[in-house]
Every structure is written in structure tokens, then in C-alpha cells.
Length: 333
Image (tube, rainbow, N blue to C red; front, top):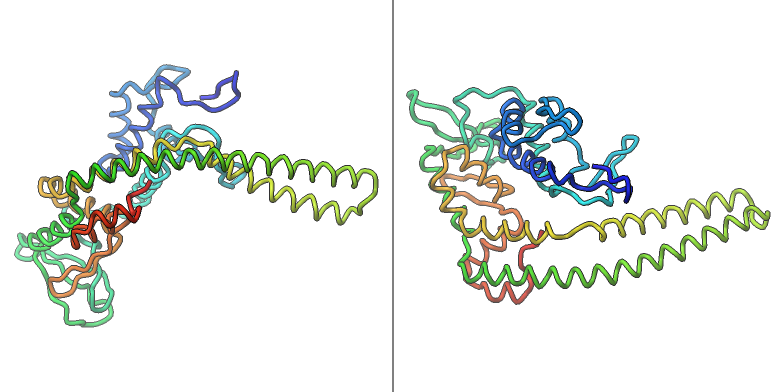
């Protein structure tokens, strides 16, 4: 909401938390706009002017507005705002990904959970699935580039092997606590560094403004040509734009960085226990969170973990947690 006193955009104390929940709910992929509209009404989200529940079109507009993650659009271009964001950019992007997938042709109820999750380790094609005897689901290479000699795998066996990959990122409680402390220490250092950097940028901005003023005075008094004024002013304005953008980035709250890091640690601690209790589609979503890619070659899975889960997996494999902590390879936001 616009604050007429400060002339800044500020979180609405009555609606901000519900708006943030909207993004979290929709990012799960479990909601349509229709069901989200009902849930928003049940949570008490109303139109500020009329007091009525928000309609589906308004929710659609909210979920695609980058203003809520700290950015804004002007004349078709995106800019970093100076207001306090309600959600992270990562959450905003997850919501946009859900919208993108929702625009694809509708899948049937028999859509197979792990289809498209793996690539063939022999030819690089996608691993697809099909049902046999109206009961058993098998996964295999599409063979789009010809026969490659890869084998097939039953869904139950694939789920078990994917579970091993999830288990690989599990970190001990004492390691998680040490990483959490490292995150807090890192945040304190970031804050100190941010203040020093902001002071330096403010001084740089003043110098650039002074230069621009001098060039302008030279232009008015005909001490420099129109061509030189145009070139110099454009150069100084471009430098000012870069400095201001960096200042705005530093001025935005960083609290969400530490919160995001803590959530990653919690996920790493409990990912496997969550995995074994979920249905196949939920398991697939969890695997997509942990892996950026995974190839399949005759029952062998070769994963590529997303950051920071790649560090967790290496630490679990080697048991060399202390070395990794001492090397400051703790997860960051």
C-alpha cells in the first residue's frame, strides 16, 4: 500500500501475510486459481475498497506482479524497487513456473509422476513411462534417437532409488546447528560490509552528481560543445544509474536470506522422512527441488544436485563435514 506520508510502498499490516501465503500455496502446484480464490476468501483476504473477497482475475494479477518480490515494471522494463518485499524472488519464480506448466495441455489422471524427471544416460533422450497390464508402470528411454541399449525400471524400484538420492543430502543435527550458526555469523558480516559499501556508494553518487552539474554549467556557458555535453552527460547518467541500482539492492532487507538458508537446512535434515510419507507426485516435486538433472543408465542413477544440496551430498558421502564448514561452504540464500 502507498504511504502518503513517506511516499513509499509499505506492507499492508492487514493483508501482507495473507498475500505472501497466496504465493506459497500456489507454488505447491496443488491449487488452481479457482481453489485458491476459495482459500483466500477463507483466510479473510478482501478488497481494500469494497471489503468483498477478491475475484479470480485479481488473484491472477497479484500472482504475476513482481512488486511483491521487490521489483516493478515501467514501460515494459523491469527495475529493482526500494520497497520491502513480501516474498523472495525464488518463490515468485516458482509461482511463474507453475503458471507456465498450467498453460500446457492438461494431463490425464494417469500422468506418471516421474515422467520427464530423468534423462537417458546413454543417448540423452527423456525417460518416459507407460503402463503394462493396466497395473504396472515402467520407465524407459523414449528411443527418439534410435535404440541405445538402455533398460527399463518399475516405478516402485525407481521410487526406491530416487529415495536413496534424497537420503544422500540428509545432514546430522549437530552439523545443521553448526551451519545455522555460520549463517547467522555470515549475516552479521554481510550487514557490516553492506553499511561500509553503502557509504562508499553514497560518496560516489555525490561525486558523480557534482561532475554532472559542472558539465551542465560548462554546456550552458558554451565552454563545451553540444556533442561533448551529450556524450559526457550520458556517460555520467549511466554511472549514476549503476550506483543507484547497487544502493537500492543494499538497502533492501536481507532478513529473508537467513530465513531461506534456515529452511534449506531444515529440508536437508528431514527430506528423506518427508519423501517416504508422500505420494508419487509429491515425491517427484521434492526430487525436482533437490536435483537439477539426473540420468538413468541400466538401473544406475547419476544425479546433479542443486546448490547447496550438492555440498550436503558430498559431505554425507565423505563424512568430511568439519572441513567443509571450516572452508566457509555453508549454504547461502
